[in-house]
Amino acid sequence: MFTNKYSMGVKALFSAGRPLGIIAVLVLVALTLTPSAGRAEEDLKIPHLNGHQFTTNTLTGDPFIKTYIRNTLGIGQSIDLFVPILEIDGGKVYGLKGNLLKAILEFEYQQAVKDWVAFRVQVRVTGRLGTGAQSLLASGVTANTGFEFGWLFKLAEGEKTALSGTLNLWNNSATVVDFLGFVDGVVNPPIPPLVKTVPTTRGGGGLRYAWAASDLVGFIFKGDMGMGESIDRRKNSDEWFFNFAAATDFDLKTKTAVPLGLALGYKFDTFPEVGEELADAKHDLVFRISYTGTTDFLLSLDFTYGWFQLKDEAEATKFTSTLLNLRYYF
Image 1 (tube, one colour):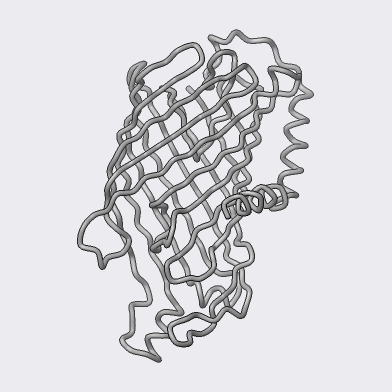
Image 2: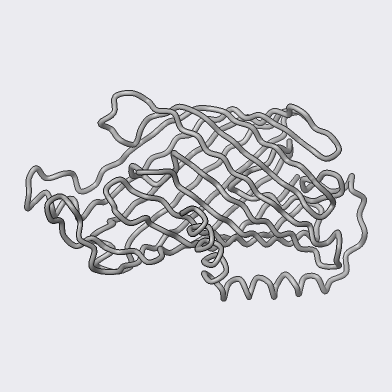
């Protein structure tokens, strides 16, 4: 089952947002026409080990104690979404197809306080709504605002590897406009609120690990665990959650004259910011292209594919997104 979903995800990464991908590649290739002077590795502010420059991504983060600022802007769309139009004997009948549009905005700042510890803050705003009458009625409108505060501690660093620990506090507020639930309540009372807001606060920690296998290939791993408020307000106690992610990246300029970095990553998350209770975890795949021709600035384009299963839905919701990332290291 997972293999089939993984194969679908890889195909979707390359088929979705294709015009944007082609434009991005052309722009990046054009940038390579400008000759750049050689630079010493000690002048490189972008994370690197063993002659390898990492193509860091938002799914896995990284263990490096650096000062940087990041901005991410993106847009996404659902794939093969079947809209439930009525309910018979407790089961939903799926008859119409619809689309959901997703907008993403992220801002992150990390400050290296010492060479062994850094403080970070991240703000994430996402919105999801139906693009047609059917999908808008069935899925409503969801707006998420998330804040993350954390500390990054260096635990070990060698010539090829780096390991850090994290302490984090997550606060998320999801506002859902449930048109279908409201209409159903009018027919079959009681009437639920049309608009509901679900705030959640969580705390925990984790590990970040990077390994430069060679000057060409690098790996990044991440794992977090914590406890926090449940999205299901019928539960009286908090619940545990965890996530893990891994990515492989390639520094092409070490073997060619092209200053490009490529990365492919996967994330498994049991407490994502979707604003609704999940039947299972949320899964994400990402393919990243980065321009690596400078010592302190990364320009990246991400193609993502994600899927999650809501408890009251029979079909998984699948999304593809295209995101533009700007990251500057001080």
